[in-house]
Image 1 (tube, rainbow, N blue to C red):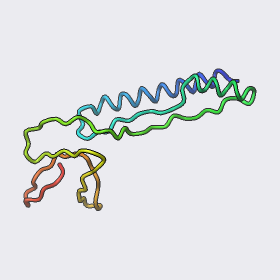
Image 2: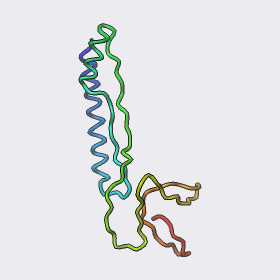
Image 3: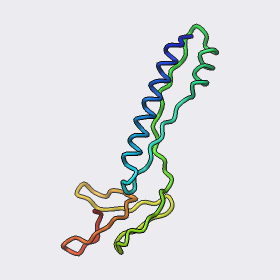
Image 4: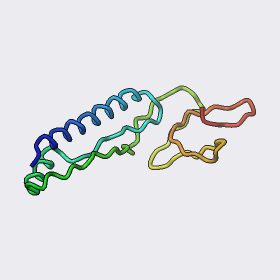
Length: 118
């Protein structure tokens, strides 16, 4: 069992977690931002795998990055054109490259009187 490989892998996981946390903190006030979460095996799971595999060495699984789909909190904006959406739905907005989906409800009326995303 290669303890240095396990320790190095653990440090890489910690680095990715710190980068993800800093990304989440940087976007804490970004409307409709979805928090990212790093998912990976624990140090204990790596040690257990190394013990089970013996001299063959541990299998090093990289952590995966997922997006937390839960809805954030609603906040009052005093803008009558702002809307919110609940549940697992999205707004469909038209763009130059075709329809796009968003949960951001900051809408504005353009010079032609069309309601659209900021």
